[in-house]
Amino acid sequence: MVRLKNRVRVLRQASTNTADPTIRLMALQLRDSINIPNSISGLRPCTTELRNIVGLSPGVDVAIHQNTYLNVVDKVEAQLRNVFMDPTVWNHLYGDRYWIIYAAGEATPRPIMLINGEAETQARYIDSLVNQLEHLGKWLDATDGEMAVLDTHVLLHFQPPEQVDWKTVTGTDTVRIILPLRVIEELDMSKYRERDDIADRARRLLSQLWALLSPTAGGPVKIREGVTIEVPVDDGPRQRTLDADQEILNQCLMLKAVGQAVRLISDDTGLSIRATAQEVTVIPMPEHYLRKKVKVAEAADTNSQINHL
Image 1 (spheres, helix red, strand yellow):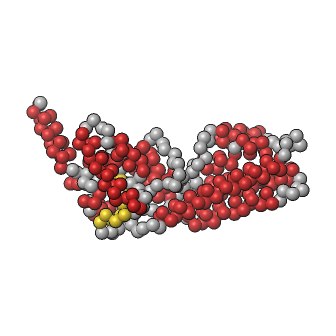
Image 2: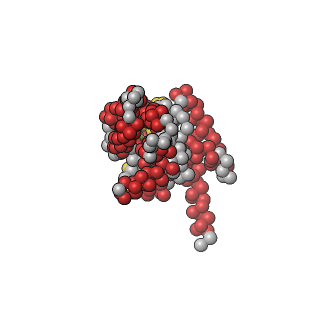
Image 3: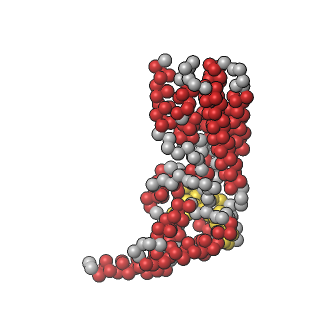
């Protein structure tokens, strides 16, 4: 009994701390090596079981209906844990109405209606997760190529993407360049940097990317033979973290979890160290692709330091 009370307290606290149950494509934290079709096949029966509860309701005993719902929730939680790593995914099952149902008794008003309503709410939630997994599967199949995620430094300080031999950089025959939406947002912020060269460069890059990707709404576009570029975008609100680097890494980890041989192309030492610690393959951007102005500025800075010695 003590263990049950402790579990109830922990789950209730977790559900209270879940501010936004919306799970979006690029925020999915999936278990390693999951199979998307199998995961979808495992989740679909969950919605069926939840909706079957509503069908059983006419004339059913309240205690039986209550226990049936609670047992189904346990099964659904187990299935969600098999697919996802983020506790907020299964904590959605344990909102305020769950605890009212859990404690329901003879004095609870309209308990059958309460249980049915919550069962339908959770069925729709599982449907939304299935839809997101289907969306993810279609996105992964949109084009061929090994996934290469670029960071903001690569775009700002190196040659434009269409001028880089990505096959040589990655060591693969086909390359699918991924620009996380957070990288685009960081370019937007760079438009207002005090350094005019960086601000102008960010504006030019954004203008070029807009012209290239707006016709496909961010979908894959060919920029060289065997190389495409894209900006994956969710079809609704996304959870924007305060940590920009971790948001980029989360996208790499999500791709890795579904079996993609993802590579992070970076010139950011801090991001590279964090990626390596999270077992994401990092390829440093070759220095010979540095923009000429950057090289000149570095040389001038070096000469200035020497003159002061």
